[in-house]
Image 1 (cartoon, rainbow, N blue to C red):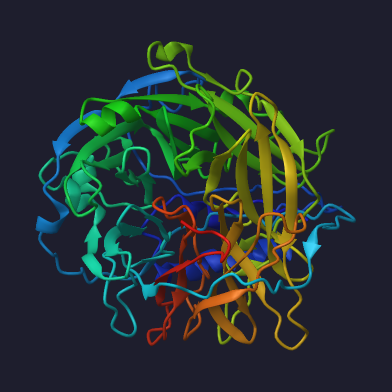
Image 2 (image 1 turned 90 degrees about the vertical axis):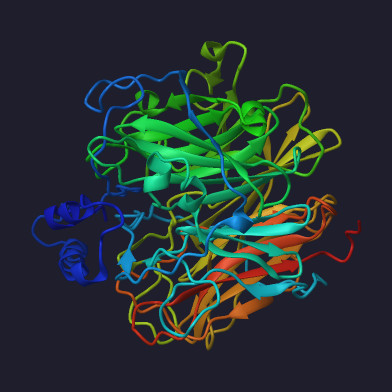
Length: 610
């Protein structure tokens, strides 16, 4: 049944994004409990409609938007803005090692505020109920990353004192860089720590501006293998009344992640661009976001950005071309929860190919797709024209260029520990699933005569969650189509069932596809796992053995059950065979809060060789 935000929940979510402290949550949880029970003010329909609110987020005060205040009617674009180039940072290796601040744990506002409706009779026809047995390797490298500085001592404590960690990372030519809220660390490929956990805004310490003053999180790191450079980013989510929402970019001056960085600050006025995700493409760095007008609890739609890659690599003032998708939302709904394409490998897409943005939708959530397109994967072409930015285009006048039918599914939605949550051993609260959007990344690899896009999101497979994944193929000069799809949710037996979620997918140069994910159950602490399928194996099946990289030693006991909000599977650019995956797990929880740790693991298919 549909549920609306009760006033207490809405009020709590209007607080500043990073100050929702665990101690203040009982009121929120009580309000959610009332809503889930269908009590007064819950807005429960008598017949149980299938609509749900979907993505929602807290926002905070700021200043003007790109061209006007948030109260003005938004325009689609293209909007063209020049970012503030702030010079070159000191070498990371020379930055002082700062003491870890002692601050109360804060839980970031949950991403999903309404359990999804379940269309009557929905059945997932592509569930894989048996594990594979193929010879994917056991972990090659397997080491700890950044951690929450609570509970047992940890080697690389984050400065955030918050959860979830927003774990992501990427492998480069000689190093691995991991980012979490609100720090980054650099490792050798053997796992040696080259630079310990470092607050992201420390890069801007000598530059001034908002990126120096704020360390707000939602970080993303990508490796530009075409230029052998690192790109680190995070947003400004808590501007003062005289500041603006912004995105901070640091582009390495060399292939050494412990060296110096070109620093950029892009201002977004009074519109908060939440959940930013990046992709590398030959003509730009692309970013997707969920837009929140200042003070709004619900999003207005999606934002799509192209940042001027060639200028950022050269340390020159750079522009961003931005499209506000809100004016082109479908009737009664909105476009939101998108990802930009992220190029893997050195083989380029056909010359002049626009990047693609993707979104997965169904009839029970936003946007409503109960008309003729049911369960749909939508794709937008983003063509940026740096010679004439005003001629840049996004989609078909803002609408998708392609709407591809996918197999039916049910979205899992976990609301403050209630609903379709993931159980865990010893944990009083279920774990957040974040089932209302695609999971990072939208990986793209070009093969002779076609390009291949990989996507994944969490779905309800039976009573448990599983990983729904897709391969979309795009013939050179042709239109995309779904080549294969499957829901990885093998039956573990009634005595030890496992829920699998928070996945990330990628493929090597041979077309072998791997998936990393979290797994947990009533008898198991959350673990870091991976599996895959070899090129040429039966379509829609993860045929390889499921490998356990690491199993946590305790439960998440923080009352919201926050998890994720993402993980990251990338492929080594030097051999295009070795996968590197990073994901969170939990240590022993002495303080009853949820002591997240992170893990980095590498593996490969035996048939892929350098």
